[in-house]
Structures are given as structure tokens and as C-alpha cells.
Image 1 (tube, rainbow, N blue to C red):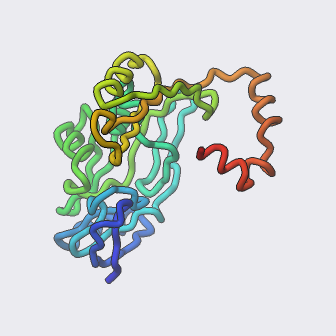
Image 2: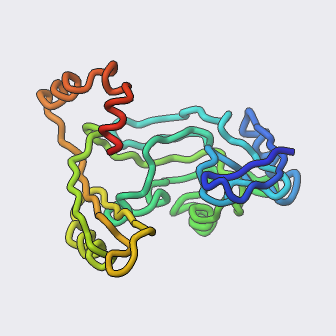
Length: 232
């Protein structure tokens, strides 16, 4: 048994960790007993990715099965890791589940079921927000969005309070990304929100890409000095 927690480090739960190396092994482990939940990278804030009796660690099943460059459809095993999935574009593009085209689920009864919006749709939608309680996802097809660069054009608005921060977010509804930072230590009228940040992805030109490479060579961006500047 192993002590395991989520991203928030609470609660810490004692559970058996098992790591399947094949899809068949994941199916069998899901069907073997009660209190079983699958775990990806362990970034859920609470205990959503911790099984009461057994936790199925899926990171070994991380293969890319297919990718269509034209449509942006990517099929991966459930242990594949995605970067920068943080939800700051919900107001425009919806949640992560809105970009899942289909999935293969293995159930507690030992079945492998392909589900989508048109095939086993009830199971599909229950699984999207089901916290692993409908079974173990072993494969998923995702719809990706083409972007030219990972750089963001950012605008920060200082807000004196929560109402002003919400108003700034409403006014910036056309921005690709939006987030408000909360200051829980402030008191009185200035309590709650301190700033709202709106951002849109750059449309990069060749000259801009050259400037980025020139201004920030790897030897300098990895230094303590530049990390401090960026964090400030």
C-alpha cells in the first residue's frame, strides 16, 4: 500500500498502486474489484484520482495512436500527457470535454465500450464529468486547435475589488484567454480581486520569430536572473 495525494496534497490516502502495461491489463484491473479509480498525472486538486482500495496508474499507457494534421484529430492512450491545459479559455471554447470526440471506456463489468456524442452518448457525457466513476478511460480522440506560437499578447487590468474584476472580464469577453487573480489577504473594500488578465495568441511572422530567438537564447532564459524577472 502507498500513501497518495492529489495536487493539493490533501487528503493523503493509503491505496494499492497498480500500473498496467497493456489495454487488456487495464481492463482486467478495472473489473477485479470495487473501489478502483484510474490516475493520470496526479494533478486533480482533491482525491478524485485516488481509489479507495486500488489506484490504476495509467502513465505507462502513453502511446500516440493516430494524428490527422488536416483535421487536428489526435488519438492517444489515456496515459499520454498534454501540456498547458489550464482552462483559461472556457468562456470562448468551453471545457476540456468539449474537445473530446470519442473515448474507449472499460467498465467494472469488464466491457470495452467506444462512446461518443452519437454512440453510447449517455455513457459518453456521464464519463466526461464522471471523475472516473463510470470506469477507466483507456483511449481518447481529441480535437486540437492549430496555433502559430505559444506566445501570448497580454493585457493586465488592476481592479479595486471583485465587482470591478468581473466587469473587466465581461468587457474583455472577446479575448482568447482570461483569468482573475484573487487576493485573499486584502481587507475592506479592496478585498477579493486585485487584477484581471486578458490575453490573445500571437499571429507570428517570420521576423517576430527571429526576434524571439535573438532576445531570449537558452543560455540566458535558464538563468536565475531571467526567471526572477519573469516571475516578478
